[in-house]
Image 1: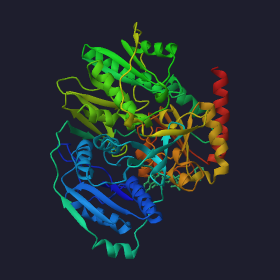
Image 2: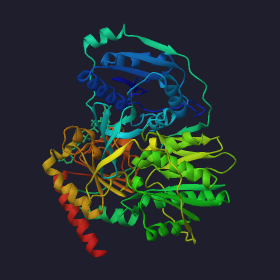
Image 3: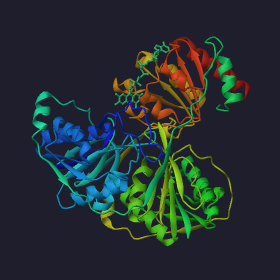
Image 4: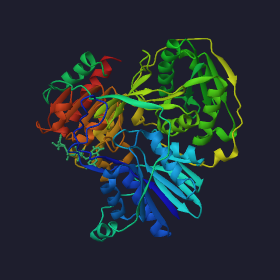
Length: 245
Length: 325
Ligand SMILES: Cc1cc2nc3c(=O)[nH]c(=O)nc-3n(C[C@H](O)[C@H](O)[C@H](O)COP(=O)(O)OP(=O)(O)OC[C@H]3O[C@@H](n4cnc5c(N)ncnc54)[C@H](O)[C@@H]3O)c2cc1C
């Protein structure tokens, strides 16, 4: 089985987010970057699947050379090889376009992404890839089993789950439950240095949108404390003042 | 030109998020002096379809069929894109529900449309078409300007109020031809806890953390939630330890919620947790540690032991409910 896992290079979850002076871009200075946590789940599941039924796992990232430590980490966790599309990811449409251009004639049986990236929170790439490659895409998947050429998936829905089947090839986006992320071991880290990482130049993709400004939520001001033995006061405040109940 | 919304249903009934989407799109249609069209897919009765007219829809396209009873991402996306063509719609609005999150990007690609996923406010109409969305998992907002002719917006549940605007809407049957290869996925089973409020759509969320010590102590959380008509949620370590299902995990790497009221019990308020809940309108924190970081991100707080405070709170809510019944 040939699997492609799309990985995004995102700020560590403890990062205090700041922006450039013109508020148009994220300020990466001093920020530690990691593999997007959902992509790590997808990668782990891909490795489990190729361990139980032979195959390869290629990871792909759209980014400039600064993302290579993140790509090497994916190789250390166990990916077979890696591809970096040498471009700054402008938006999800651009990313999906680059991945589709790369993947279209490679014969992948399965393409996995994370449910969303924790920076721009798009949850777009999986479905866009499905559309561009004319493949089914199943989003926010918490269980993925493959038997022969059929996948059985569980996707999240409001208040429950939907179980569905789909013939390969397909695209799926991973969420918690699909696998427990793995930590690279020493042997993985050593072998990652020599695994193939191919750099590919990007294709042209039209620009349909642009982020014109970032800002931060306003702080809530001082918390109002209610004594632990006067909880009915809290109920009154929630009703009268906050109009929340 | 027109604005098209996708009217999502669950088991033949429209969801509240559908009415939110219509109310939101109604403002856009009025601003652009154009019609508002709704498309419904699946087997929805006429009486239910008529409900859409209460919020400003001029026309309803109803698509039915045996193959469409259950959600098929690819086929539904094709139908909505066909509906857009048939009604000359250049702006498509749908809910950022679980299914909507899978549909919207496909529709955007089909229509070469710029796409705002997870909008939390109306577009600006002063020359540019700019829509606000959350970014960095609740730690920031991004204003996204769509420069394409066609535009797709998915709206976060609970972020726009339902507004009535009754119109005499025409209901039409719509039967686009969809290619067989759009039906490769096949739903086998839907598992849903019937009596539970769904977390992403809930107006009130009662959430428990590691401070609750173990899964056996969730009875009081569920009782409080039920009294308030709330959904239950939890912090990540709680679902990692399988005290609660993953689907209840909120935060940066879980579900992002934006209810009217979020009640956090025995949760410390780590940055990753706050990221997913900070869009809540009102936040109440109950924690025995006065130094817990969550108090800095809360509107109301009680410093105290959850095992004493929650039973009292349950009584107080009961009293309040009987006084306001
Ligand atoms: C990559 C990454 C992603 C993460 N994503 C998320 C995420 O999406 N969501 C998330 O929640 N976390 C996330 N975390 C974990 C996060 O950093 C915290 O560890 C977690 O939120 C802590 O959960 P907690 O508040 O329940 O537990 P703790 O931090 O252990 O806090 C328990 C709290 O309960 C209080 N308490 C104890 N006993 C009582 C009592 N009897 N009555 C009242 N209060 C009591 C304590 O004072 C304490 O404040 C992530 C971490 C990483 C590294």
